[in-house]
Length: 601
Image (cartoon, rainbow, N blue to C red; front, side, top):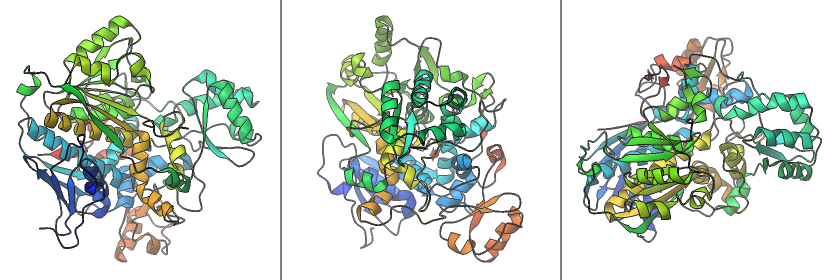
């Protein structure tokens, strides 16, 4: 029974609507508050009546004809030393990757792994309900923050175990740039011609323009961008108005780094995704999916997902659906996805590409050709989900949007993973670093007293992909409950809102939204780094461990009752790290493969 202190979330008290797949379900939630904040919020937004029960250690979601699906969220294995956000970031390599641009490990100032763990728990619960609706058993879900961390750095782990070195030396450096009048800004373009034209307009040296493109192009992959110093010097000579003019003339885009206070004033409290059941009914014919054997650990067995995505957001969403049992077919351009060749490679294929795309089938289709679009519609007719991350408006222009594809398949879940969901009138290009700049994430990831700097770890692309999977699963459940086609949309903006919610609340109430100076800065030892837990960090800084080896430094802190763990700086060493709850294996190409982020039984 719930304690007297239980309370329904604000989202759960809203009027129920037709596009909320958890209507008539109840969730009794317990476990660590940090790990279940997102679970409470998202399940409530999806229609469940959420009740926090301080006497519980797990989450139970059921009712409305469903047997309860249970979930348990933890930081890491008992006794591993992974016991909060700081130690989870340290153990899984997140501090190492985020710190590359600085030249030393740094902790993210936001609770990134707790947020990701919460979204993964929601995924597991929704997948369990979808499996039940399809004739499977009730499921038990478990998620851990250390596995969420491994998923977040999976591309970097894959690259560290590749057959060849990185294409760009992972040296410190990167955006943002600063104008003569003190404006910090991000620059974005996917076109080398636009890159060169932007810098020529600002009279940058030709050799600096040439040398800067490669680290700029690969910063998504390496989490650092050692630009020539001359490029930073160039922007400091020009006013912001002149820089914006150069961007407009070249086709590149620039975005001023917004503060959390600015974002808080425009935050509309919208859901991080949208679901809309369409006026199309499920056909009466029996499909092969209906005859599939659905098990607790493969609730999507027999379902087919078509994915037309590039880079991270849509491919990650489809990858997770594949781990849940779906057949995933990638729609690639003629000649195949060019990112298959992104260095470094394993067995001739990009290790990073494999991290998100292993196990998928592929079909080459030129979506600009009418004949090939007809082929794609034929594939859609036999699929359950179509997910893409094309530029805004492209799907409609090609008649491949939800309206047209659900006419072909009246039981389709059409999913779009984009940048802004049409919520910001002045939105820049919908890429990770521009989204960090525009939403205040660049300020949030660093503590007070440090300049705002978007992380070069792909924070919002990964979290946006997790939101995409969550939205598709909610759409599949809504389809099972209503018999109607569903359109879902998730975005980088929605992911940022989920991640930054605590900071935005602090800003809205006039409090400092950033963490205090020095927050999550690991301590240097003679041979490495250690990270105290967040609660122990203030006391730990009183001890000088710089002359001690890492093991002795940990012993000293623990001897004083302080929790701490070693910071992973070599991602290749994660294969044998006893602190982790699951092993890192190898795929058929020999590329490192992190464990599934949840388990369902």
